[in-house]
Image 1 (cartoon, rainbow over the protein chains, first blue to last red):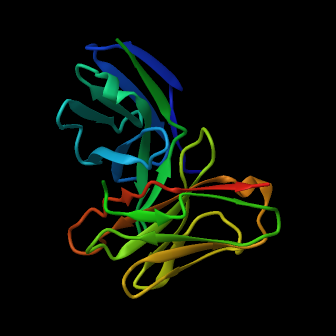
Image 2: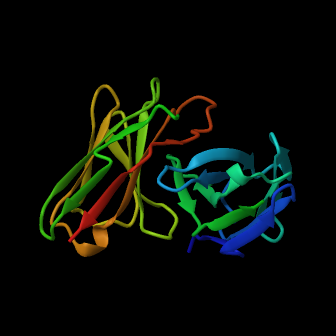
Length: 113
Length: 115
């Protein structure tokens, strides 16, 4: 079946370091992937997206890499800040007439000063 | 702020009761999706409404139902509440059509506790 999962449930980093959050997906037909950040008590917040015809996309301090060969997605956060502490979800869009997101369980990022 | 508002923010119900959750979509968005997020898990797709009709549904029983109104706002109704229905219910709005990717903007959610 379709699934999106994460390799590491918790990631602890020092402030200023770079963070890498990984995600595996199983549906090779998915053509759109999104990373969301969810802070405690809030809804998921869009960070960055990437289409299946791309390998890399950069935003402000964030980069998403897509490896379709091994069905792997990663989110890189440069110079991690305390405000980056949150749970991060990758999600894939299953095409078929409507945008249905399939989320993984999430990775908690803890940034220590 | 995403412009998506949900109410109520928190509520407590008992088993067997019914609940209605409300969502106002971001201005200009014509599609509303509902997700259920159990504690410590990722959101799970319940269903999506477009032009006042359900146009996609996840693996949820019929006691989960919804409505979309002409102003694109939406309601999620859950009948015969069960303990496992305790979760954060998220509404997400998007604009579907044309070349838009349908990026979803989430509200803060309604936290439902079933006792």
